Image 1 (cartoon, chains in turn cyan, brown):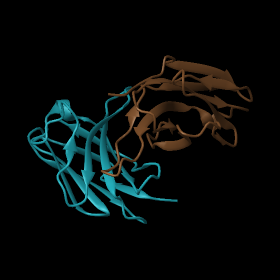
Image 2 (cartoon, rainbow over the protein chains, first blue to last red):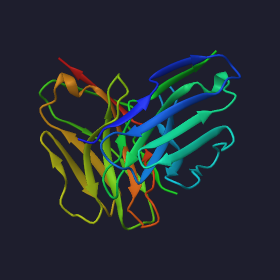
Image 3 (cartoon, rainbow over the protein chains, first blue to last red):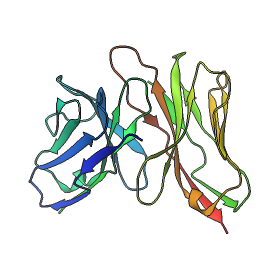
Image 4 (cartoon, helix red, strand yellow):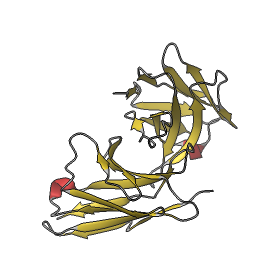
Length: 114
Length: 118
């Protein structure tokens, strides 16, 4: 089946640093990629939609200057959390989609900001 | 905006028994997709079952089946012959149908924690 690889799986860093998370579709060209955030014991919340070669569309309340998304190719999207602070600590998970197929999720990234 | 409601924070069922998880949603759209995802402690998101709104027939996948009531905006998941490996968080999700201008992300419910009693 379709595989989406997300890296890193866990990152711990100091407050004020920037963290980049990669999301790759390994065996298909994704027309769209999505980024979600999941706080402990809560549901997944869509942060942004990313289409190759165009600017990402952010959901209401998500700061685009804080969460930079780059979608340089049909198989790679990156999320950079800039100047991360403890409140940005969360589980970030990407998904990729081709046409009308169901979304395929990466394994997620656990981000801990000290 | 669409909303998805899962009114059962937690459900418990005996192994080999049947359990039904509830989900209701609100939308003004006529064409959309509904999903059930399973999230075990590893936090992987695993697709359990998918339903297209234009299809009247309820989707089934082995021990998993749905009761899709479009007029009532209800989409429940039935798990038959529950197994220990079914223990997980279950999320109901909604997605608008492909519009040609790009795909939409998923709107998730808050989830139901399913416990399987041996």
